Length: 409
Image (cartoon, rainbow, N blue to C red; front, side):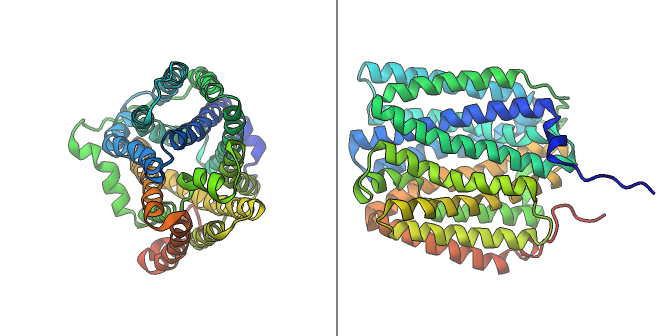
């Protein structure tokens, strides 16, 4: 009897289309992270308002909420590489417009909100596309490693982007916007070099087909639990929107410090991604996900009460590491359990939840900070996230009891 050798990281690196797409994603996310730092600091410099920082997230979320389900249907029908490349090109044009607007002193509060809305519309197509494309580039037995390695690249970009953005912003805001345009164009070119076998969905272009992804997630309770858990954790526990306030008013640092704070969760996530790439979670995956969400909330609670830069950075790193366990588990389960011709629509549902947790979470943070102050907002969110993880044991028992990524046949 012959024995098959378990796939290794070297097996994954032999898949050139995956590596090209990895490069495109890293370059695009690096630019996007720089852009988010610049827009947040730019808005706070213009208005000095926590409410307006929250509005930046809301203006990104609402267009994505409206467009993401139809976008998922389009992703299943059209060539995914072409959609992703177009998203990169549009964002490059937006960065160029910001360069022009800043140079002519045209950027106002309203400018930033309009740009945020455009970015939200673009991401409604970008997120389901990049999630649905990866399984086309690697075989199923390499998918968890591919997701973890993708996370490694993403988190590297999330580390470097804010830090580089903060340094460049200290020179001039247009140094950030101009550099973003360059990286987004590189992502556009790299994406166009990716080849895969495109099999368009034969689903009819009607409302039932558009909503098929939502119906599929609702019927599969493990996926529903994983996605909902991530939604409530980041919606309640996220602190990104308030980092400009913490940097300036609590930790008494400048845009460079803001960049480092924004990079800290990604440092933890990168370290965890490296661990998961070499040693994937094989047993009790549901319990590990719940534990990770609870640790995420506790770490954000510590950040909320901290007044020391070093402790704040450590807390954010721990939060990032815990969050990445949840992200890799959720994405791997989603890709393994979704039929090939529905991946775009299911990824679109996931994108709505991610958008709600990130952009709507930024609005929640800004609005609660306006009522209770930034410390009250973060402390409440951290404790609430721990409560969500505990409640999930009863609310989502299928997820809590899930043992392996791939169920035995």
